[in-house]
Image 1 (tube, rainbow, N blue to C red):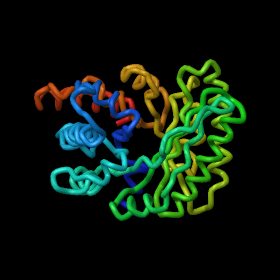
Image 2 (cartoon, one colour; image 1 turned 135 degrees about the vertical axis):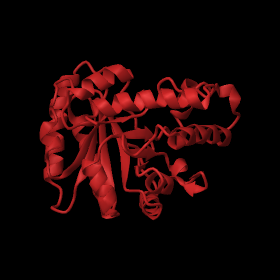
Image 3 (cartoon, one colour; image 1 turned 180 degrees about the vertical axis):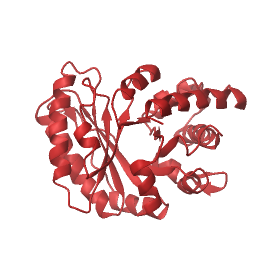
Image 4 (cartoon, helix red, strand yellow; image 1 turned 120 degrees about the vertical axis):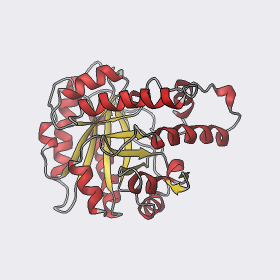
Length: 294
């Protein structure tokens, strides 16, 4: 493990930029960026366009390592280059931003009020490639809609796969997202907190994970996890909140930093000049970094 990356992930200023939209969410991300589905005719063209978008973000002078601690990449982004360098290498050695990789393959059908992850075929090979690329950690997402047995199944699966990732020498970001529209959001968050505490308490002495959580209804609900010795960092997803609303909620949760995707890229379009694009991105990064305590 890269000790400099660990130090930055643990206590570095800034937040995590989630640039990991995958096959299902890419058309929506491109549409928000001003590129309609009629602009591409197959997946290859679609992923070329989204890589251009991500490259424009990452190479922007606004996208700096002083305000951005890490960036989460989609597998295809890791396998591509930015300015002639592998993406993870560019992030760390040019921008001093810690690279993470999304490893999940999407969600299974809802059961007992939650969606566990689909099986992750070839995970060991993917983790080895990530490690060889200089990636520090991984991210995997499940969704919780109601408290109950489904929530426990989500957390159990997250920690099971998390231990596999730790065994490969990477730090997992465990992401059991609570749907912000859940009619029992607060109850689900209380149950989730207890399950996560049990999960981290069950880790070996030399193991630690990161947690990516929905901004809770109760401010500082996850403070015990923020200060837990087995937790490298607690980060928050925007989860459908607007950037202003997400930042307002984030600022009320001490020690938690952002890991925003759509809320980060809000307002960016392909039609903008570089000056307009960089100014819009700079304003977004400044707002999110401030809410993250930077």
